[in-house]
Length: 182
Image (cartoon, rainbow, N blue to C red; front, side, top):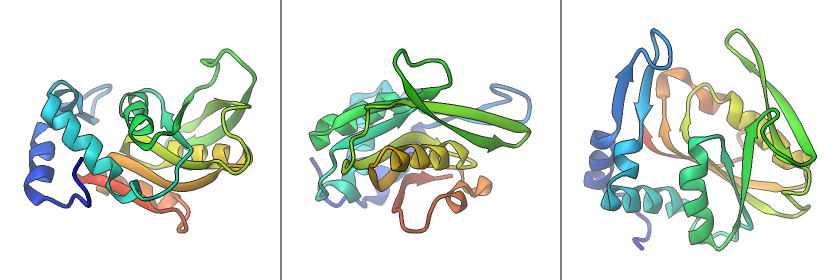
């Protein structure tokens, strides 16, 4: 595995592989499709290495992946960090007792959940999602982890949608790592 990755060519290769799909899932949205990265072994390896880079030397006991695309790379990150994996899902999707957090959407609210026993007091947690847009889901996930007694050591995103300024919603004391800023 590459250490301290900051290779401009690698980042450009990943950026070019991300497809933009206009008007998906609704008119006016420019959806960032990461499936070309996932489908190419070399690009997938580069994405994982880039996401891991700032966290390789930290002790992380759990990686929390946010539904649903955060599950794909989040599980791989957990494997490489020798950590457990915790799914955070939309309300009503987990089978056991849950903790729930609501967050504000542009028009209304939504909720996410995590099993009550997924994070133990003292767990050192890396939160992952494929994209940070407005930051609401990541902000709610941080609250869930902290309510359960975990310490969030960072958030790792493959893509940050800069125009939506989602990073501003996250606490200043938590390191935020976005591989691609679009």
